Length: 471
Ligand code: 5AD
Ligand code: SF4
Image 1 (spheres, rainbow, N blue to C red):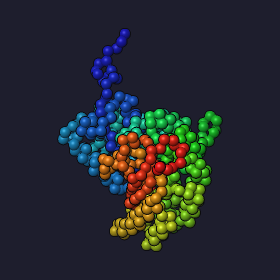
Image 2: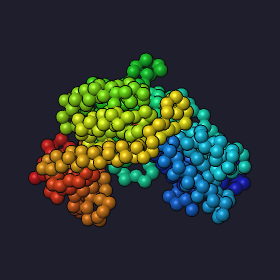
Image 3: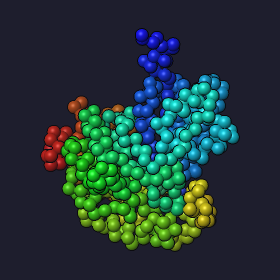
């Protein structure tokens, strides 16, 4: 006998409720939100773009620097107040890297949130939501040694339909002394390469033209087949992905300099669809500071690696991360960072002032002794120098023909489109009726600022193997 559902919800047909997800932090976190959306959709939740429309509001949080945390805390307080005033039945959840620490503060002490869920516990979210809805304690911050969500096809949120992130590993074993990631995301583990290929193939089928392979340290990707003992390294994975289609561009992030292998450079040089851009965080130009950071390389070793990369891939673009004012950093150490920047001339950089993070080696054992004003001044010097270098690097593109993948309308003007070169530089050019996002276009670079290249002469690419040309 058929059982008649007691409520519409029990029928499992209609949506259970609407969920709004807000994401902070790195690309990895944005991809995690897409995994979260997939888990919830599978359990009949609907995803909404409007928090006011939502029954469940989830913040996927970042803990990398104090500023990131402050922003999230502010937002939680705002949402919690909104809930109390207007929508008492709404559930508020904290996900991701701040979950563990926020458990005590926001959940136990201040009772500002209803759900706390760490980066390895997203499969349990539907249960946590049910628990919270019935007034129970809904917390899962357990870290895992195995979870890679390999079988979950992410639901692409805010997608341009052209570029997508694909996680290839989770966690980090490096233990840089400044970094909280090993504590928030746990041990490093690599995802089954065949599940990665399956995801990439689905993306190709859906019309995507670019994937970025994501991990905290992609160069230490290493998967061993539990049955055959077969090993897949990052270089091998990169090649497997690049082979899926010549129309698919492949990017990856982040590389740790100490783990970058010749094999990876070799594969990059051999496949035109692997983008000629490496994000290679240096953090500091002083060997003494690098040692205190436990980065596993010296200034000279890093500079040597840069020469090797440029020799293997002459057209490569390099970007980096730099921290100003790490523990005990002297004026001389800071000058070393500036001089390393002068030697490398990075195409782009992400620059931060050091902020102490709980539990890290630096927080426990080193003194955060560079005064705030000094950190800010050094950071500004680094930023000014980088702006000069970005401009110089971009100006060097003028007169060159570059192939770009079109991503969408330019931010500043309806009549212009933008795309990226293989070097990850943004090019703005005039819109034309027959050119859409996902198309490849060859452009002649005519002008440049430190952030953008401009072109007016261009030609749509019909065959990906034809040489780059505008007429
Ligand atoms: N303070 C400042 N910057 C940090 N980063 C990581 N931890 C800290 C910290 N405690 C920066 C590093 C890293 C990037 C993702 O964030 O430069 O490469
Ligand atoms: Fe932030 Fe790091 Fe977590 Fe990414 S992994 S969200 S950067 S703390």
